[in-house]
Length: 158
Image 1 (cartoon, one colour):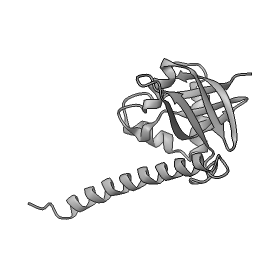
Image 2 (cartoon, helix red, strand yellow; image 1 turned 90 degrees about the vertical axis):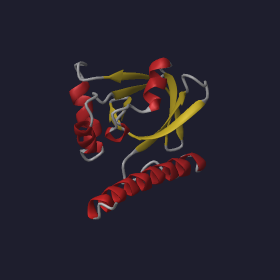
Image 3 (spheres, one colour; image 1 turned 90 degrees about the horizontal axis):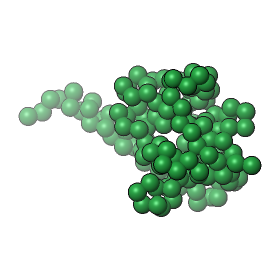
Image 4 (cartoon, helix red, strand yellow; image 1 turned 180 degrees about the vertical axis):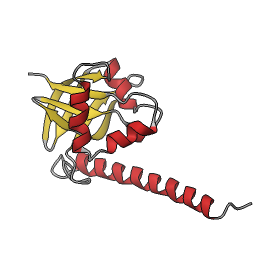
């Protein structure tokens, strides 16, 4: 039994989501394999960093390409997972082990990660920074999920 247009629209939406996921994976691959020469502002012109965490279950290094904002010396990333009801896996990793590394362009920086939520006094200000960098997409993602989306503060270790 075919639902006609509605079925086709749903299939198109799933196909677009899959395509976007593949584009993100290619972007990360280019960023990593070029040593950071390419990838910092490749996708939509957004500044992008590579976050390297330690897998909380495997102990293996996990890398995620994330749009970021700056708050003084700190880097800010958002655990949006595209508005999914589930947070991204890297968030659980940084909660389990806050010491991690970022790569911004070719520069690698050791950082300590701290997840912040709406009850944090600086959350709204930090949210505005990252949401502006990402052209309001994070506000759209927040509307898609009931969970509060964390803004993760990445503080360089001196």
